[in-house]
Image: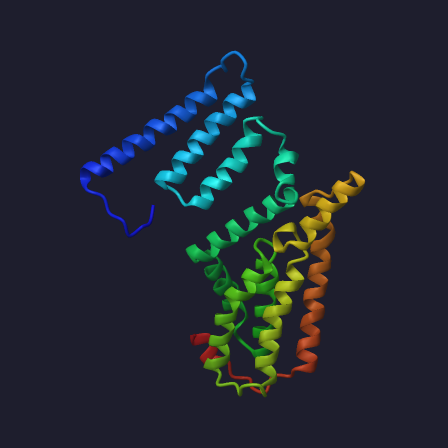
Length: 257
């Protein structure tokens, strides 16, 4: 139902009543034993369809959320096999990534990710080299728990504020170049540490499972990959401070920002 449409109080009450009635009907279809000639899975499927159609008509939640609920309920209620349901959309890694993006979006929307970034950056504001390390480490750490592209997008305005507060010359400042490269490379390096950093690792592991019947767990991957990410983070730092030597030393304006 379009948001701009309004309802009189009586119509709203009727609308809510009908939505509740058909939702309860769907729940009853799921819970009650099936009649003769209809399987239990078929009865549950009819109930799920009733609930989803009701939610799509009355839109108490976004249409996409109802669609996701349908995808989740089919295997959860043992109507269809989980792998069969996921196969319609590629494989189960798609849903893992969907969950990752939802969590990352929630962190950005609530401001939690920015608060974490500022907390990290505040520890590295005493010198230009420490500022580069701060941006790099912040991007790398946050990419362990949320998608790396989201981390880069979130850090970009923060780094821009730092660069502008220091009056660094556009396209010519080595420090500005180092800060933005630290933002990008930190996110990329940290993104390899866990499955939460990006789509490459979960999709590769899912292909491994489908092709060879082998898999790699979240913890096994993290134990192997996080040390590599740590080493690469400090290797990137050495490259940045070696090839992009800061042209200033006073970080007071950036600390105020």
